[in-house]
Structures are given as structure tokens and as C-alpha cells.
Image (cartoon, rainbow, N blue to C red):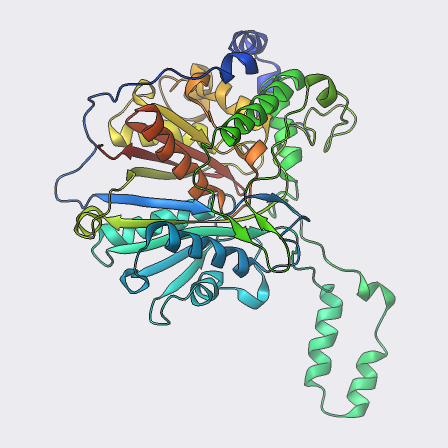
Length: 475
């Protein structure tokens, strides 16, 4: 049955008007690749709040994000997380015994290292007296790791927290079928030969069929790509617009890579292999080549393809978060303040990927800001169609009034401020690690461009989302 949201948008009188309105926006890569003029730091108000500790990011790093099945394929997740932690220690020179707590996000857990934060911390040489735990919240797992650390510092429980995330899509757990698992467990409990033979007599060849993990919603059994295709159709986002946006992401990422702007990357010497120094998924193509690809999910009429989707990625990230007074006492010059943040949740079927639309106005209101106050936007790019659909939803009074209970739209981010150094479509998306990359991209862009406020937002499986305000630290 056609979903309510899809039906509504397909039958809206102004659906074509939305498409026309968006089509005149400057999506061309040429207009986006010109060097931005040096911005002057604006004298806006600070978001410091009375009687609440200021929490800062001293610095953050990530190992290069690689397409799954490449240089990291023989490693384990804690190897990647350990490399990120070691890179952070080298970058900041923070004494290991100063760190009060370590939190990492991950999504598809390696069963041998279910608390990957602890295993990576021990491997990186942190004291066994330093607590560490792992969180999971789909694509906003690292975001949850960061904000959990913010809560620990704000409450006075800690002064120094390391937050990060990791994902290794090259090696995901593949389980035996439930019938096979049950038989194996029962065999382990059997006490006599007769009991074992009785159990073995019930074995069937189909017991050997494995259970493969899937990027799909448990509640709807729908893959995220399928949801992205339906969302693009509901908001009249064309295949051409999606391909053009993906080309923009790859072109801007390549430009940033060539100009050395991706300074959060630390090299990683892969055991038995060469040292990896840069992301390997950045591949600007042409609209003509992209147009040749077939739909990846809804065939033959879908618009989501391999070219306008984020790819399966291996990688890890880590950030050093401190109370401001602690950072200054230790002689650090922080990069940014972590300010207000919100989490949102909505229908996982029709609105699975609309987290930024719901989270953005809430975090702006919480911080007392408007969209015009934001100097750098960093949104997670799961799919081109997802980003462009969020733009349209954010720019629609009708959607705000009928779905969000709001009187007016928040407006869509201006492209000249949006993901200017590439995004998940080009840089890659290790599920558990992307949140830290987004925050560091915002912080580094604010320092480079002279802005004051950054807005980070992301959607996640389960119909959830996150947004955070990042404020540049005064120079």
C-alpha cells in the first residue's frame, strides 16, 4: 500500500513548484569550487550559559576512511579504534593518566570485542584504571559518544573525556541459522551419547544457511536505500539532481584533500602493509558516467544508485573533550566549544532519513540562534536524495505545519556554507565514526573561514536524528 507521506507529496499542488524552486539553486560544482573569500570573525554573542561549565574540543583525529574490502580488511575494529586513539595521543600529547573516561560508538559489533572502547583503550596504552564503554545509536553512535562525554563533564563527574567511534564493514559477523544455533547449544548440554545422537538425527541441510546482516530496519524490514528512494520520490527529487549533488560532494572533497584541508586525518601504518595517509573513496566522475548506472534498490524506476549513495566504509575517529578551565590549565588552545544539542525521533518508515529536518529548528531555538547565524553546516550525507529531500522539507511551511507542529519553516541551509569540504558520499561513512568527523569538520572550517557557529546534523536508522551547535574558540 502506498505510504501516506509518499501519496501526500505526490499529490500536492505545489510539488512541482518545490522541484522548480530547488532546481534553480546553485548546484553546479563550478560555482562551489571557487575559493571562498576570507571571512571576518563576526562579533556575535557567545552561547556560554551561567553556572554551566564550558566544554571544549581540544582536537580530534581520524584514520583515513577507506572503502571496505581494501587496506583494513584483515584487521579487527579495535585495531582501527586503537590507531585513532594513538593518533589523538600523538596529536595532543595529552598524558594518558589525565583522561577520566573513554567512550566509543559502533554499530555492527564484533562479538569478541563487544566493548570495543575498552579493548582499544588498553591496546593504545591507557591505564587499566581508566573506564571505557561503548554506545550504539546507528549512524549517530559517535554523536552519542560525544554528548555522553559532554554530560559527564557538565555534571562534574569528569574533566577530560575521549570520545570516538569505529566501524569495520570489511568483516561483519555472520551467524548460523537459529535452528543450527539451537542444536549446537543443545548438543553442548547433552550428557549422554544417546542424547547427542537424538539431537543430530534432527539435523537438516537447511540448518547450514547463514544469517547475513543487512542495513535494514527491523521494524519495517526495509533497507535504508529503499527508504531513500521512496523519500526522493515523495519530495520530487530527480535523478539528475541527486547525481549533481553527489558530484559536488566528490569534487569538493577532492579539492579539500588536494589543498590539505582534511587536517584531522592521521596516518595509519597497517600491519604488513603500507602506511595509509588519505581517504580512498573520493572519486569525482562526470554526470554522463553517473547517468549510466542502474538503480540500486528500486528497479527499474528508482533514482538511488551506487554513485549517489554513501559507500560501505572502514574507519575510526577520536576527540579530546575537556572542561575549558582544565584545558587552559594544561596549556591547550581549544578548537571549539560544544554547545547545545538535541536528539529527535520519528516514524522509521516514511520519515526514516528526515532527522536533520526535525533536529535543526529545535537546536537553533535551544541556542537562541537562527539559520542565518550559522557559518558552517556539516550534515551527514547518507544519500544525495536524503540530503535534497531534507532541504525541501526544511524549506516547506506545509511540511512544518502538517508534520512538525510548527507555524513556519526553518529554511534550508545555503549551499555556499554547506559541506564545503565534502561529506559522507565522498569521504566515506563508517557508521560508528562519522559523528566525530562532522564536528571536527565544522570546527576546522570555522577556524579556516573565520566563522563563529557551526551546525552539525545527521539522520540515523530507526528514524532518529541529532543536531549540535559548535562555536569557534576565540583566537
